[in-house]
Structure formats: C-alpha cells, structure tokens
Image (tube, rainbow, N blue to C red; front, side, top):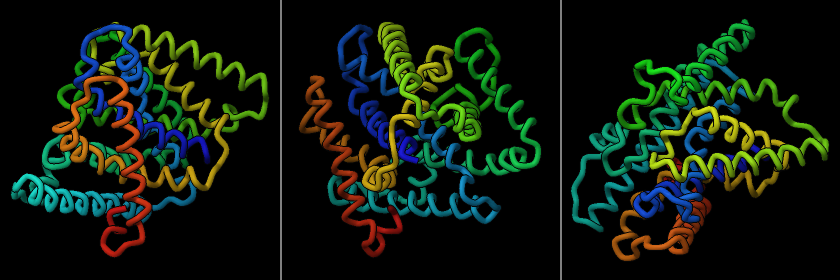
Length: 320
C-alpha cells in the first residue's frame, strides 16, 4: 500500500533528522529546528508499526520468518564489513567485523544503528507465536494488544512507576518490550484498515485538521519540555498524534511505483547515513537549521542513489 511506503520514507527522513539535529537542538524552546526535531519522533516507532502491518500479509510460515531474519542479518553483516573496510582507508582503523557485528546489537561498533535491526529481528521472532494466536483465536490477540497498549500508555505517561524489564531502561537497544508493542499495534491496524481507510472527502478533511491540531499540541508540549524525543514514545498525547499520522498516510497516499522503490531503499539509507554523517560534520558542522536541512536531504538522496546504483551489482545486491 502506498501509505506504508510513505511512512517508511518519512520515518527514514525522521531518523536522519534525529541524528543530524541531535547536538544542535538541546535547549528547550520554540526554535523551528527543535520543533522539527520533536516532530520527527514518530520515526522509530513507525518503522516497527509499519513492519507489523506488513508482517505475514501475503504469506506466513516458519520458513517465512526464518528467511526474513536470516536475510536481513546477512545484509547487516555485509554493511558491517563494508564500513570496516572504509574505516581502514579513511581513519586507518583496523576493526574486527564479527566483534563490530555483535557490538552493533547494543548500539556500538562501526554501525551503532544496528540495534534497530536486531530489535526488528526479535519482533519477527516473537511475532511468530503472536501471529499464530492472531490466526487461530483473534479475540485473544485483540485482548493482548489492548493490554500491552494500556500498559505502555500508563507507563510512558507517568501514571504508574512499574519497573518493566526490556522496556524503557538503559539504551534503546534494550527497549524491546516497547517496540514490540508498536509492532503488534501494526498487526492490529492492518485488521481494522477497512474501518480507518475511507474514500470520503469530509472524513479526510477531519483527519487532516485533527493531525494539524495534534501536531501543534505535541510540538508545543515536547519542544518546551527539556526531555529527549524518545522519552515521549507511548505517552497518550504522542499516541493520538502517532495514530493520526498512520491513518492520514493510509488515506491520502495512493500506491506509486517510484515511492515503492524509494521505500525499499530506506534500509540502505539507514545503514549508510551515520558513518557518512560523522565524517561529514568534521568538515561541515551543523550550526544552523538550514545546514541541518541540507545535510538531511543530502544523506537521504545519496543513500537512495547508492541503493539504485548497486542493488543489482554483484556482492552489493546482497546488502541491499
């Protein structure tokens, strides 16, 4: 569906905004760059929600899950080797790709963003029994989804102080419970897609207005908070805004072959951008919103070009 492709592209750009604007948007306030920084905070949870939405949509089996996990880990290892070689030429650093591959699962190594891939693989792995529950006893699946969503919203909104392992303590690499909730939320949204997607002009106008209002409310609250964007994941205001983004994308974006190709390149952009960014800011530090915007778009376009040029090239196609 075109909406899912759009969400993957926007989420990828949001991740780039996160990393480019990280050090530039620390002080609370209404600076446009800081507002954009927080408005990009749907990005990581949306990747997991979109993955849950497409999980098992066309076919499903143990072999399907194993193929997805093994396939993406092969791509990731190829990227780790690629960056290890590049680091030797640029920095003179000799690294061990096997150690960097493992370190990546905890947000370290030559490719710190690898934690996302490992967490996604865990979502697919644990999503297998949940999908079976979904197929064999759907009411139980809905109860599980509602319970997990309720726990997440209560916990992240500060209504309870429960200590939940693998939820929101430590680095994001350890937040599996939180991201798995977004993953199965995507599965739930697929079930109700016929209810939330309508070819009705009044409905779409109301959706657009609601999203505009909630974007303002969320930006106003978050940008002045003094907190990090990921501290809002699962907050009740964040969730209303987040679901509206998803529903609007599904309603307003028809399928496009070009957008579909661009969405398939988002993994390459994700695994391409951070080493390039860290090298680029040594010479072109991000000191203004305009420089940050240029850097974001340059990283996205260069990553997509890399994908288009090498997706059918020997060896490189195994990474893409």
